[in-house]
Length: 152
Image (tube, rainbow, N blue to C red; front, side, top):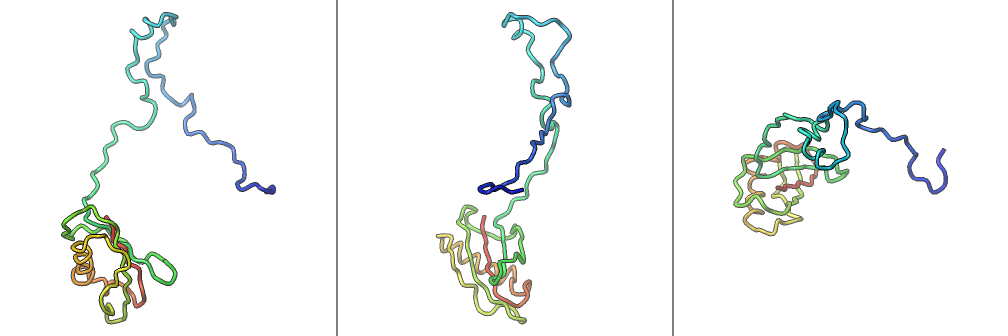
């Protein structure tokens, strides 16, 4: 039962690693020593070998020039998201650019209206041209009004 002033219910902690589940790396059956020099001389081959994963290979992330998100303007529902790899921009370091677009059954109604700029006119123009002429945003969306965000 929730008490006044209490925000979250108390939960029992769940520990990820229990002490008995880790392998005993570097521990031998030899009697211990109180001399620090002897302990340091023995060393430990893999002191942290029980934690995490070893020999895990991950594929490299694909290079992208931008990331596109399209949300409906009325309720903010995400309609489309995609990494842009085929766009040619002069720089990959730019501030996110936001456009408002209106789509009819025949496609875009006019040009996208920029509401947030990257601060670089060349990038803003290339993104606007890309969305209209290359990506053909009007053909991919149902009729309505959308907030289009493109960022690095």
